[in-house]
Length: 363
Image (cartoon, rainbow, N blue to C red):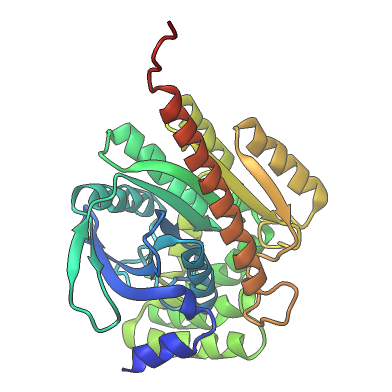
């Protein structure tokens, strides 16, 4: 009953018919939790969403806004909490996060997902195996998902056809970003402390050193992370879990270059059919706020055959609907772009099919 009231009253949730939990098991036994967002109409396609570092769809309201807007455009969305984030088990591990992408896509094709039918209270279910999907990402999720596609190709994995790859604010070279250097600088002295003390302090420091949160939210997240750290002995940085402060530094240094991964996909002829990257002109995290860096990054991406759009948004848009940098405005823009690309792809597919139909010769 409570969920029914939430569905009716939330201004964005009206775009979504149902949400339910799904889980995937990685090759090492790690459990990856996901939420499925079902649109009111028959889905035109399924989008698998991979989030950025220290944020997860299960606990980040801004992501939920974006996913509901994608529902409005007729897409079913599977939003995964990546390894070490949100409700999924494990801790941050960039290499394993990439193989997790392969395992999730294989599961979608071979085992499918259990789709609920009817209304909120309906118990009717059916299994749907997906032969094609699209991938949407934010920040680190773009690099991880692209790396996952490369792993899938190298392994010869049986995954769905990737109709489209969409990335908002993917970092070109994450380990060299100023924001990462600042976090590393703050965390490095903690290696001299006992592990539990260092992890407690890191849980306090990390939210204060990043600009994803503002004002009271920074303090609340920092306080909640430190309380959780006392009981678990791990670092709790918003939605991210780490075994130690040094793990963050080590794993971020393993993040591959986004352009290089796409270059390898192109050489392997494994690049998705349609690719679109949005770069925020107000994004100081990935440094695309700097016009010269943004132009250079854009040229690198276009050399790899990737469509690029520069849009006036920050890396983490505010949840405040009145702000010109609100997640509501960004989500509407992204959802319409994804729908436009999908419509163009569907039209091209129809034309391709009709051109293959033999015609009767004229007498």
